[in-house]
Structures are given as structure tokens and as C-alpha cells.
Length: 259
Length: 329
Ligand SMILES: Cc1cc2nc3c(=O)[nH]c(=O)nc-3n(C[C@H](O)[C@H](O)[C@H](O)COP(=O)(O)OP(=O)(O)OC[C@H]3O[C@@H](n4cnc5c(N)ncnc54)[C@H](O)[C@@H]3O)c2cc1C
Ligand SMILES: Nc1ncnc2c1ncn2[C@@H]1O[C@H](COP(=O)(O)O)[C@@H](O)[C@H]1O
Image (tube, rainbow over all chains, first blue to last red; front, side):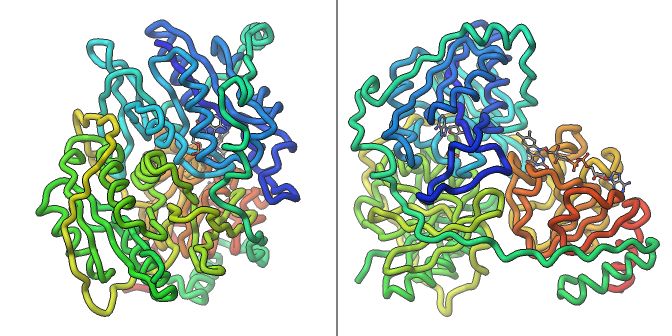
């Protein structure tokens, strides 16, 4: 199984901020998007069990390579980094378009994406990409397994009350969740090996995409204002014995008309 | 007259519009009234009778309902089955704004639709209002540390709206329901549903709960959730959880709040035995009132709660439940 895993390098959770241009500041430290590490782990397990290789694919600034290095240390065979100054300020439309062009140049049976990103919370790139590539789309996966005859993929799609078992022929695009399981820690050996693994860097020209058709200039939305959320007043701290404490909680909730 | 404002209905297992769908309809009606535009609801589903029934229910909220019978959604993943028909309808009628719920199904549908229409999507909307005749979308970003407002730079934008943008309210008079059948020009590969499996006892959904009682590692084990459930029941709320306890298998992932779980905004969030790690905080910090029960006075949650009780949860929570029950009796 040849699996392409999409990995977005996002600002370190808790450190996010906007730059002066009102776009997400990507120069303040990046890490692999949490949701993408679950699909990475699932891809590694699948290739370990059924043969094949994992290729990581990211679109992002130079610093995004760090997120790829970690995935290579976890066990991916190679990585592709699409990077171009013209891609700064890209929206989901540009992201899907560029990733689609890159995926068309790769050989694969499956493409894996995460449920959403911590910096954008969009959750639309994966279905968008599937539509552009004309691939079957299996989403919110909690378990991913080859079908009985090996030509299909089966995915448990989490729903509000259980799951749907989905099946489609490969190639296909699978979007996964945390329920796939904890990502492994890179081993020391993995970290050493990662240093010699290839990260191919592709520009827009390499993908045959004109710079003026992507990036901030064609983004579908524009931030018009930003504000800080109303501050919390600071907590009232209750340290009394349980019965007194409970009475104070009840008074507090009643005063706010919550009970 | 400006183009119409559309609300796409998501249906529950009984084929009724979800609370989120009702909120979208109410939002669409308000936006349309201000702009002097039409507000239209769109219902997609399998079977003429099903969509007619759902359409009639949705017409409680909107003057015009269009229903599309998409047989493929019965036993295939819904987004790929429905998006081509919806794309055809959008091309035919050109609504000014299409509102879609920011739920898993809604995001799948919006992504597929955007791919077919090559159109911008504004994601994660907490509120939508007019600003200089553009629909301005308010978003809470960076885990609630920043609120931004964005406008589309293109016509006919898709907007994903989170639960709780407005309070759902029926319209003064019910609307009309019309079945339509746009000729889809594209198709997406269909994905077969082999089997639909229901969890044995599904917990109350945290998505649109007014009160959430969430438990963390402090509850000590699966049995510890008993006191959390009792308190949630006494408050009429839903049970939430941290990733630590979901990973431990004490409670289902559907109840997880945070970066890789759900983002919730209840009126009251009770965090019991939860430290308040950043990845949890991003999922709940815009809640109306936050109450924490923790034995550690230095736990991070103390910094962003409104009321903190320092003590052993097993001493406090059962007493609180009993006091609430006594108060109700
Ligand atoms: C990529 C990524 C994604 C993540 N996503 C999420 C997510 O979506 N949601 C999430 O919640 N976490 C997430 N996490 C995990 C997060 O970092 C924390 O590990 C987790 O939130 C901690 O859960 P907890 O508060 O239950 O446990 P702990 O941090 O162990 O806290 C337990 C708390 O209980 C208190 N306590 C213990 N016993 C008692 C008692 N008897 N009475 C009163 N108080 C008691 C302790 O003082 C402590 O504060 C993520 C982490 C990563 C790396
Ligand atoms: N710039 C990117 N590079 C690689 N993958 C991406 C990128 N943006 C989004 N993705 C993938 O699409 C998923 C959903 O992203 P989003 O729709 O932005 O929340 C992520 O979890 C990634 O797997």
C-alpha cells in the first residue's frame, strides 16, 4: 500500500498570533498538526502490516520541514514539501488546488488527511481535495482496514450514535480522527535515519501552477477586524469544607440564573 | 432584490431538522429580512416522502423550502451523493449566501460543494451579520484568544456556521415546500455504507447542550464517571470529558472536548478533576460560565474559571448533586 499522508505545519498550540498583515504568523515556531499525527500513525501501521510505503506531503513555509522531519523519524519513507513565496496567505481553495496538483505527481493507493487543523479549524480541505481528484472520500475514520479482497479500503466513520462502515475501491482519500490511536514517539534510530531521508521541495513552477492563481491575492475572504474576547473577571476561589462549598456553588449558579 | 440567503438542513436519525439546522434557518431569516432578500431552506435526503416530511418541519422556520430527493444518500456516504445535486441547484438559482452547519456532515458537504463550484468557504462562523452589504462572519480563533471578523471577497460564498450562532425560533407563519430536481452535470464517486452500527447506549450530545459537566483524570476510573453522570442529570446537562479519560477508555470519544475533540459553548461548563491543559481549554473557554472542582489550587484551569472549588471531587460532587435535587423537590 502506498499512502500519501497530508501534514500541515501549524503554529504551536497556545502560541498562535496574527501578524501585522492580519494573517496567521507562521514565523513563531511550527509543529505537525495534532490530527495529522493520528493518520500518520495509522498509515505506518497499515504499511507495516500489509507492505508499502508512506510519503508525507505538506504545503507551507520553509519551517514546515521540521514537521516533516518528525514524520520521517516516525517511519515515513520520504516527504514532499510544496513551498513558494506566492503561497503565503493561502485559503482552503488554494490549499486544495495545490495539494491536488502535487498528489497527481505521486504514485499512491491512499491519501490520508486529518479531521481539521488547530490554526484554521476548517475541516474542508479533505473533502474539497477528494472532489478535485475525483477520489472516493471516506471521512471521520476511527479505524482503517483493507477490504476482504485487498482492492478496497474499509473505514469506520464516526457518527453521533455509533459508526458507519464505509467501503470504496482504491485509490481513495481517507480523513481520520484521534480515535485511530496515539502516534508513536520517534526512536533514536528513526531520528538518525530521518537525517538521510529525502525531502523533495517543489515550487509552484514545478507543479505548473501560475503564481497569480493562488495565495493571498485570490483568497476568498479577508479579515476586516480583530478583537480580544471579553476578559473573565478572575475566579472566585472557594476553599471551605464540602457542605459550605456546595452551598456557595448553588448560590453562585442561582445568581447567574443557571439553575 | 439581492440574491437569496439559503440554509441547508441537516436531518437527524428521525429525519427531522437538527437544532443546528433550525438555528441556520433562523439566522438566514434574520439576514434576509435585513437585506430585503428571500430566505430559503434546502432539504436533501433519500425518498420523496422523507424529504417532504423534513421539508414541512423545516417550513416552520422559513418561508420557502426546496426539497431534493437524492436516492444515493440512503446507502452511501451522504456528501458525495448530495453535493452534485446541490451544486446544480446553486448554479441554477444563484443564492447570495449559502449557510451550512459546521458539523461533520456539514463540513463534508461544504468541502465537496466548494470543490464542485470552485467557490470560497468561510469556516467556523460563530455569528454572521451584514457589514456594508457583505455577510461578515465572526470567528473565535486560536482557542478563543482572538475574535476575528471576515468578509468574502467573492460573490455567492459558502459559510459554515457553528452551533449557537442564534437561538432557533419558528417563523410567524409556516412556509411552502416545493420539490425540485436540478439536473446534476457532475458526479462524485459514491462510497457504499456496508453497515450502520449503533452504539449501545448513546450519551446525550455535547454539541448543543446548555449545561456540560465534564470529567477528567481526577475521577479516577470508569466508575468515577458515575458521580459526573449523576450531577449532569441533576442539572439537565450532558457529560463531557478530556482526552486523557477518552484515551483511557473511560468514556466515548463523542464526549471529548478540546483540540482534537469538539468545541463547545454551553451556558455553564463544570470541569471536574480536569487540569485545564491548553488542548482542552481551546474546546471550552468561550463557555458562558466556567466552574471548576479541583484539589490542586495551582491547576491551570483556575486561571480561566469563574468559580473554583478547591477540594476532593468525591466529597463535593455527590453533595452538590444531592443539594440540587433537594432544591428541585
Ligand atoms: C495533539 C494533542 C491533542 C490533544 N487534544 C486534546 C483534546 O481534544 N482534549 C483534551 O482534553 N485534551 C487533549 N490533549 C491532552 C491534553 O494535553 C491533556 O493531557 C489532557 O487534557 C489532560 O486531561 P485531564 O485534565 O483529564 O488530566 P490531568 O491533566 O491529569 O488532570 C487531572 C486533574 O484532576 C485533579 N484531581 C485529581 N484527583 C482529584 C480529586 N479526587 N478531586 C479533585 N480533583 C482531582 C488534578 O489536580 C488535576 O488537575 C491533547 C494533547 C495533544 C498532544
Ligand atoms: N497546507 C497543508 N499541507 C498539507 N496538508 C494540509 C494543509 N492544509 C490542510 N491539510 C490537510 O487537510 C486537513 C484538514 O485541514 P483544514 O480543512 O484546513 O482544517 C489537515 O488535517 C491536513 O491533513
